[in-house]
Figure (cartoon, one colour):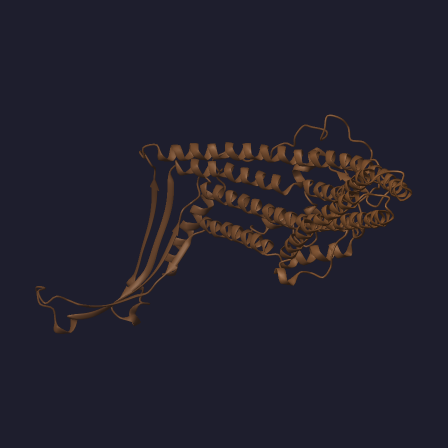
Length: 502
């Protein structure tokens, strides 16, 4: 029995040794070269944006090749924002879902790796039987009934001669890498959404404050007109018109407060909480500091940094390996099967050397006719690779567009804020002059209404311009990939891939 087992094992291991050094059919994947471009726009970026004499109005510098910290949101210098992001990372359910998908992907890899090794099973089959009485000569009465005990060991192995199994493992590893970058994209999206929600809340609070300031100005103007009406200096229609202007300003508050409530609900959900568990902390523009130095990654580095690009590349790798799987399926398939054991009429006799049995079989099959099924599967795999390659290029183009849009937006945002601040100052001066002239009776109420409307618009524009600079700065960090490569709370893709060689 021992010699038989040794011979069976040697035959199986010989088959494994013959299959491992062989080449794997199908194309070997090569990473796409980075785009041959030197910038994100036809014209060079300016060294910095313009500045404005107001909070969030500082000039921002564009720094080529500047790296991004792993926790990039800390650049907004807001402890409240930092705490919110950390709470979202800890409690938002989208991250555990993506992590579970990644674990599932790697378990699929480990499961497929098992196909490189033999499969062994052991069994025990006891049987109780009765011989038929019609047998001639009639057996002795004591052997009409008998027992049979069989204890087999079966070893089967399919040598990976043409590398089909290895290509399948390669495809699954690439799929797991794609899922890893999907996890990074989920992380980046979550953190970016928290920052965007905080900025939008601050913007709405700024607009509400501006509207309340307008209501205050309109109320003071109405008081002036009512006093002048009592003195007979103005008509009742003038007072009524100012009352209408005040009512219109007051009507702007409820929609803004409604948007603020919805924004708070969104932020609460991002933190993994129910609406009734909204955080006590709030955001306004004064709690957020505009980052001064803006990173501008080299175009050749962007494809390394963007999680969606890396995921698309991994999907292309998986599709390339599937071509090898399809090619190997059209070639001869090999298998080895060994079966050894012992059988006896009594349990105690199973160990008797003479009761040993064994079989060793090899099998080679080659499909000679399948109506083109395997050929078309191979062509489908090639088409799937072409699709993945086109999707990869589309993802790269979208990534460059995102960065270019963010850079252009930041330039325009600075110009917009500078103009809005100048317009707000001019509108405030005009309103002060108009109110003074109205008190002196030098102008009628129409001039006041015009000045109030202009000031109202200017105040709202400043608040929106301040928030837009913050939001577009966060959008640039997101467009550049969010710096997952500098995070310390997760390992690298290469480390995860190496863990499969266990």
